[in-house]
Image 1 (cartoon, one colour):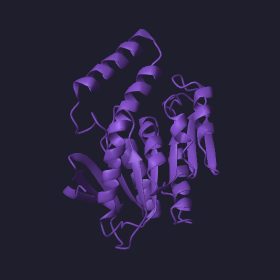
Image 2 (cartoon, one colour; image 1 turned 90 degrees about the vertical axis):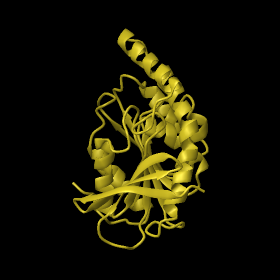
Image 3 (cartoon, helix red, strand yellow; image 1 turned 45 degrees about the vertical axis):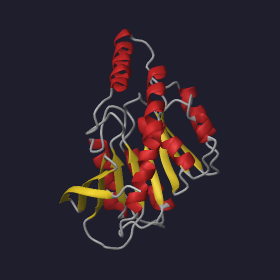
Image 4 (cartoon, rainbow, N blue to C red; image 1 turned 90 degrees about the horizontal axis):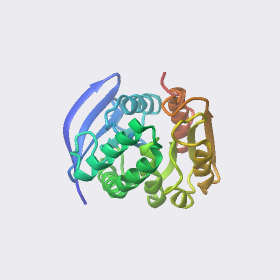
Length: 255
């Protein structure tokens, strides 16, 4: 098992930010600045073309840490953030930009590339979870959630399907092509975000992925708007979802 090595630490707004490395994979762990008691852990997957400390990741972490007292961890996906791109990454990204410039559908390229990244990232996430649970403030028996939209869903669905320690997940905004069969293996509570007017993911495709989850408790949040117009209040809804399912119900989300 790879051990976790902290490489930097800072604090602000009641939250401690610690950079770490597990098996060569860089990540960040956000935790409450006060309180030594064990607390639930939420793993977050970032979107395509971004990184572990992207504004969306830091903002969601602040809500979960301040609103619920949770720990939140993100790792850079292969070819993202502080991780170098391979020749394969460069080819796929170039093909995506070419299709975008030509006005061609991006879906087939994104689905293919994200599936490739997921094969690499799922074992990395499981090793990271092993290392995080060795920390005394998290522990091996505490509840774990997963929160990832877009590419975070492409990696999150296969991860949740094989990782029994994850007991609740917020997902959304992806195609069902390679994820539907894995979604059928998932029975934990799910909150799923969908943009009704998504210009990349057809409405029927998003609904098909939601339908594929075998969870008895699953909730669809469909909002008007295009792909990048997911309302910010959905982050607050995710906080309430995790508060219910990870054991800290009754805690309100941060504003």
